[in-house]
Length: 180
Image (cartoon, rainbow, N blue to C red; front, side, top):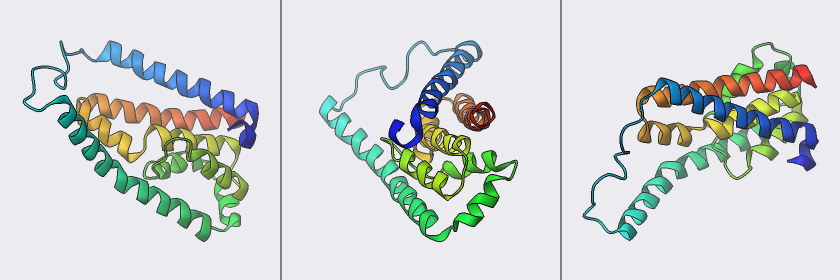
């Protein structure tokens, strides 16, 4: 990331994402009662640990695999179909950060794919803060993450997580562009 965006944006992204995670943790600590034990770990299963692992791996792979393909398709379409002049005009639109965060949700990225995609968007005309909004939102609240969150946590907690990351992604991008 440093090679594409420099130290300022790299450090800001790390620190800001950490702060958003802490905010979520503190809100959860104060707003939600922790169950005595998580249902996933309670009781004995009839299935061996190896079988449970294989079943969980297959389920996770099938659940996220389709979103990886959708994300790749969207990224390819964006890079081929959207002219830079449109991106430059869009970047000056005041609500562009909200739109970028919303559009980032179906673009599934992991292991750093959001970095070159964000750099491509910057090359087309987005500001560094708008690229940061994309990186934070696409990695923090992509569809597989939302799906897993709703699967493992109570609905109000999952909604809180999504809302805080969405708002945090927008605030992070706007704040970066204002500061730098």
